[in-house]
Amino acid sequence: MSDFEDEMDIDSSAKGAAMQFSSNNTNSKGKKLVADLPIGAEDNLPWVEKYRPSSLDDVQGHQDILATINRFVDSHVSTPTSSTVRPPGTGKTTTILALARRIYGSKNMRQMVLELNASDDRGIDVVREQIKTFASTKQIFSVAPSSTTNGANSLGAFKLIILDEADAMTATAQMALRRIMEKYTANTRFCIIANYTHKLSPALLSRCTRFRFSPLKEGDIRALVDKVIEAESVRIQPDAVESLVRLSKGDMRRALNVLQACHTSSLPLPMRNAPKDQPPPEHELVTEETIYNCIAAPHPSDIRQIMTTLLSTSDVTSCLNTINTLKSNKGLALADILSALSEQLQTLEVPAQTRISWLEGLAEIEWRLSGGGSEVVQTGGLVGVVRNGCELMGDKGVAMES
Ligand SMILES: Nc1ncnc2c1ncn2[C@@H]1O[C@H](COP(=O)(O)OP(=O)(O)OP(=O)(O)O)[C@@H](O)[C@H]1O
Ligand SMILES: [Mg+2]
Image 1 (cartoon, rainbow, N blue to C red):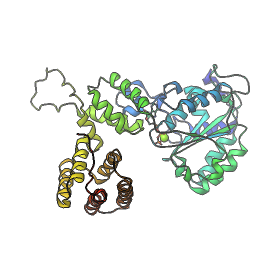
Image 2: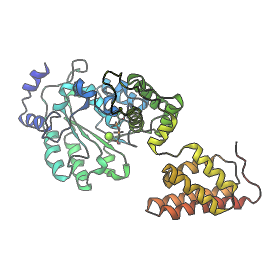
Image 3: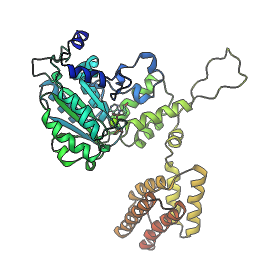
Image 4: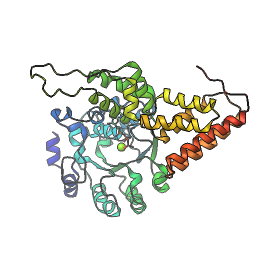
């Protein structure tokens, strides 16, 4: 049926566009859509792609956004344009691709969807030529799957242009988009995905329905991580799963990448002269330590040691020695120590004056570090800031749990 429809796409420019923007077309700007991958290829895929949800039902979290999107589709309401803004790895691209698959079906996506992301040139020329051509041509027959086709009002009758990572588009290209978005509303819908709102033109934003994808909740990340652990038979300690979920800080991509890296590295190297009939080696158990090492995050016990030394030793040289020794032994970066230490310091019961001086001082060091400040000098600065706060407390000291 859909083959027939492909043939019957009588709009000649649309057909040209379909060829040009086909997701199967290797020399086009369109991208290969993940769900169409052959089964064999999936075995070697990174887990983030292998477990990328292909339907909206499989997307974890974002219940409100998904409910709204589903309502749009079910009631055939076509929101003029939508833009999704938020942190990486939270499912923006996944959601919109799943939505497109739901509206058009996997088969028709290549002809109805134009997906452009940061790897494509999206300057003014592309907006003027490719996007405009695709948007301006009309699909005469709706290609929506029969379940969603419901008269002329069906969303399947609209073409969809997905502009992923749109915050990287030039200002002039965004300007040029504004008129195109209005002019071709009759047959095209736009979806603009970005991480930073301030990099999108306000005029463009005002033409959109905005969805904010917040970092995923730990429960949502755990749900998918548990599924992958079971499917891939990963040998991992429950504590390690807990740390993995916490350290990924709402980024599902990070969680899956770290899990895969730890699982792969847990396979012992084959012995050189091992007999051939030996059974394949078993994966070692992934521990909390493995996870911390993989993420290169300081272990809580290291941070605790640094904190105890800083709070209890007035000798600045020995404080510095402790931090430097830990840094060189465990390969820790000051930026990671800084964020973990400030989290720990916030949990302490201290006078307001001390807390203020810690907050202010640590923020200042982070800013200097991000601007290229030297690690050695800023390590000294860190010791200075924490000790300064302690001196403000006088003899009172800090109560810490053992
Ligand atoms: N909500 C989610 N449910 C299930 N899997 C998810 C979710 N969010 C992210 N993932 C997983 O993380 C991977 C990356 O997600 P995605 O490409 O959608 O992120 P993104 O929000 O577009 O990030 P970026 O801003 O970096 O482009 C997906 O392949 C998927 O495996
Ligand atoms: Mg994305």
